[in-house]
Image 1 (tube, rainbow, N blue to C red):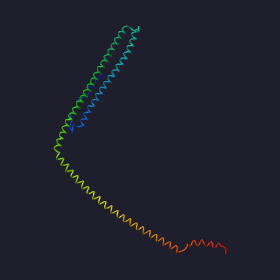
Image 2 (image 1 turned 90 degrees about the vertical axis):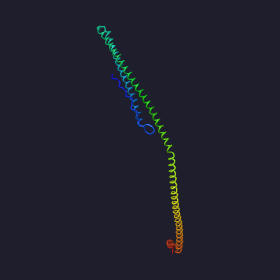
Image 3 (image 1 turned 90 degrees about the horizontal axis):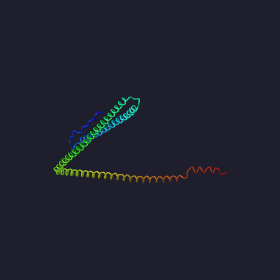
Image 4 (image 1 turned 180 degrees about the horizontal axis):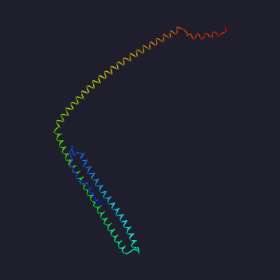
Length: 255
């Protein structure tokens, strides 16, 4: 059987570039990913070793089955009175050799499996320990860097406090002035809009009054025309149709 492959070396160059308020997050994530990949590789290596042990165990079981069959066949040959005695001794020797070979195969398989499992477990433990130590180191360095940056920022804030306050006061005054100008402009626009609305309302009221007056005049004229028409009809007398309706009735009376 081929020897177990050596697990990958967990040692890596762990120098990271520093960024604002700590290390570069992308590099830290990449390093952690590498450690995770190595842990996965260790687990895979261990699983392959377990599979190899299972295959050896299966082969051993198969060899034991063949040995049992051979023993049974040889036993039948030995018990055969017709077989020569020399063959019996030879068969015993072959059986002993087969048992020795199987025992050697079993010992080798167990030794190889134990070595592979031990190497995989050792690599996994070392990788986990390395990852833990590296994570703790990074956390401590990041904390120190963060503390230094906080201290530097505090010093800058203390130094620039007065200038910042004056700048804020100037900006506040500028903002108040701009707000006042906007307020005055808004009031002017509002006054203009109100005046325009009042003018339009007055025009509309005047037009409504004129319309009412015109309607009253038209109504008066219509009423006067109606009265004049009725008076003209009354002066004309009854309508011709009434006279025509009375004439046939007079013709029907006997002479």
